[in-house]
Length: 322
Image (cartoon, rainbow, N blue to C red; front, side):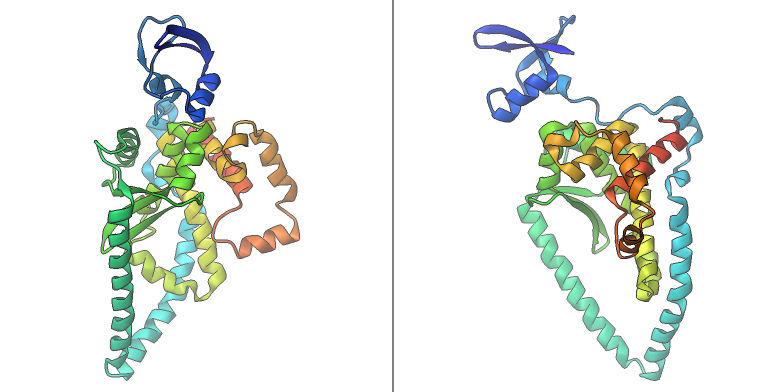
């Protein structure tokens, strides 16, 4: 798509979308300048032409056949069951210690809880005064993506913050029962440098997925006492991340944007759009059976990035998006 823009000296162009993005990134052009797509007579803010809708329309098959329960990774529930199996003896032992200690161990547990509570309050105070909370009047485009994801997932909206931190990351948390999502500026900037709001929506959807799937709920915290078999805890963590990838894919309704967001975390903003996804998946298939790849997987909290590209392909096919 070629685009004309209005500048002080009059109309300029046409320019390709990539040329205009480069002008924006270099600081020589504002995102809000009036622009018109070639063949159209309507002048709109440039950013509305460069950024596609944050939420795509799902294919008819996906919209009619996918239930929210299908968003769960199939092996996550199996991993959770095994966590509960190994959590039961641990919980029984804790109860035994409390009874035999005539309640004295409760003081120790209470002290640990108090330390954790103070830590949560400390972090909440930092977040409220050092991060920007997304709302209808604050980062409204991002706010619309959050709202649309929550509507698609039929979930209550958590507080979403953007925090300055030059690390490609984001996380979900519960602070005194209040659900929170924090997006680090390192991830946001990297995606928007060469990407678009749809890719950023994938990141938002992934973190919302942790809340939607109950990964931070008290019941799952109890189940995680079974993580004394730490390989089991790591297995559940990896499957939970794959569930969130599926949730994020469902939120965006766009396989390519979802994979580009993940590739951005792999090679960075400058190269993400140039990566051959099919070749990257083949690279994973070429190494996945190697001993040290499998061994390293056992000690990982997250699936390998190239493996996640492959899982997104399979999820998209299952959802009718591919």
